[in-house]
Length: 195
Image 1 (cartoon, rainbow, N blue to C red):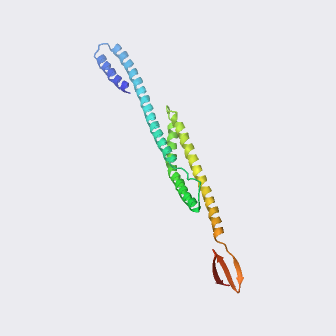
Image 2 (image 1 turned 90 degrees about the vertical axis):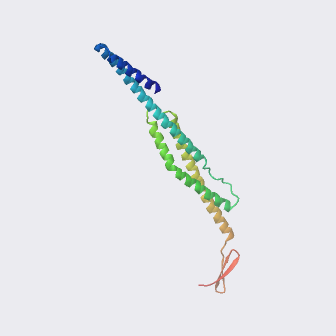
Image 3 (image 1 turned 45 degrees about the horizontal axis):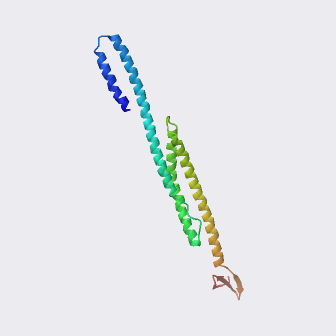
């Protein structure tokens, strides 16, 4: 671009010098040559400008994609090692937060992918843009699938564990004794009148 900008004043100086001559045919031929050179420089300047614009947009996209991948990498699934029901309950809450955070990133990831796809349709776009788009799609899809799978597993584990504890701790027994129903709950006896 700088070289093209320096060339334009030289062409204009040549035109000014040629206007002072008394030979119109020579002047016309020189003017046509200079105009042709000027048009080539304009085309090259436009191409260079487009190339710089595409490269700048590609660089910005790459930086945004890298930042998004960093943000996504910080959303790690919880451990699936538990000591008791309380550990499982806390892990379930944390995993729900992780899935919610991934959902919040969903629109930003979609917007980034759309911008990347638009860029790939441009001429002269660097090859890494397509790779960045594919990588972001893959990472986000895998991360979302993994988080949702673990959340489903934790919910099932929690229900099974909770039911098992309830079944062990609380049992119901009904016996008939002199017109009253005796309900034994957690080793406490409650006498209720027979209906």
